[in-house]
Image 1 (cartoon, rainbow, N blue to C red):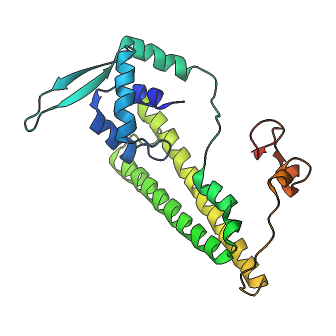
Image 2: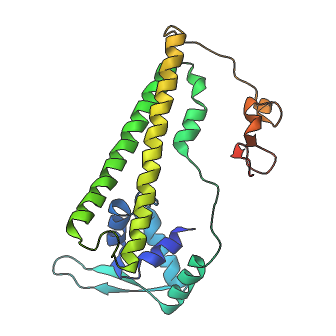
Image 3: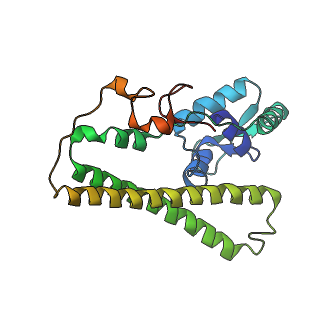
Length: 225
């Protein structure tokens, strides 16, 4: 999956780069983010490939804007991608990377603060999606079972985003409880612990070896069953 494919799909209806940025920010932020600095070069690349075409449209005010349209070749590329195998990819999750290494600070209170801020972020995003769904249900009599085919698939993606955020909030709550319990057990004192050397994370030496498989690729990937 790439930004190219997402843009091809969004451009089934003509749009400017700025309008596309609004779609990313307001409609699909729960599964894909993109900045204008990424969007415009990708649009230009797709146009060079013949998958998009563009024209400058006049505006009542200002210099006008360039509007992009998908071409027949772009439709074919989009369909080929949609019909390809399920993509898993190697997800990069910065907030988990930071949490994984936070023992470096040697202070559970900072871990607690970090998790609390993280929960606030997830809860805010969850509330935003819930509001989208609530307004949709109120304004559209076809919601949810009689939606058009296009909007039905939008709903499925929206529900995925909501379920994922609900799970993340629940994980934050569980993690916060665990950190608080550890702090209470240790009397609230900061406790520096020795960290295992990098080699200790290899299979057979790390305590998580029972659930993590480092022999099949990236370190820390869950073992396939």
